[in-house]
Image 1 (spheres, rainbow, N blue to C red):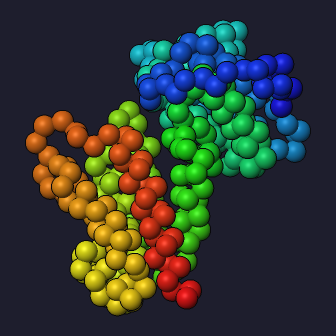
Image 2: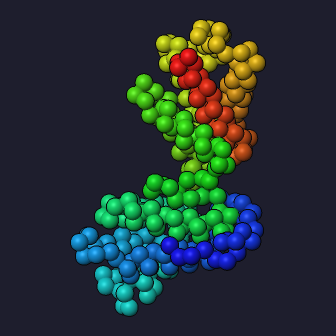
Image 3: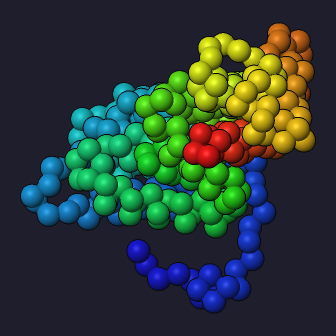
Length: 280
């Protein structure tokens, strides 16, 4: 990667204000498109497979520009069709393209090229204060560093075969929060809290017992202080009281992204805490 600008290298660049999900200005589109062009123009050694980016972009060109792209465009693929597609497509589709392109690169050239490309894209996004980043082939929401740490820690915990169910449910919660063009905040809350309930059932060796009931049974009654049990019950109560989460939704969503993110983080911390009981 190129050297950082002076302002970033020496800490003079101000932190950009976080932007709404759909904020995706022209300069960001141009900058990322240029990184894709550099990738296209500087293919690695001939020992690696050729990546035909024009063929990759043809379906998007057709959808976005509403015209059948030619087999061999005049002036090469970067003369018009690919840049025009990247400048005109909806913001969420640009992210879809980045995800598929990253998987395309990894499949043919390996993870090293994917990581380098992702780092360049993420630098551009971060400079604009955009709350998305390219990670492991997926465009995901940028979380507070502490929340991200807890989410990663609980993902390691849930990778154990005995936690397969809650692992899948917590992954669905993350997927709902990252859904575009609109996050599915209600299902994020439902699945995050459901994962807590599943972990608690596994620890207690029970099935389909509600979380508020489980917390007043062993091993939780003896090992979890009453105030912490009450706090966990409040998370469960929030899930039950929010329209569209545990009950039918009439009208617009009442769950905010901040609330859904808080429930996600609290659920991760709770599962880590409950799992620690198994080690004592």
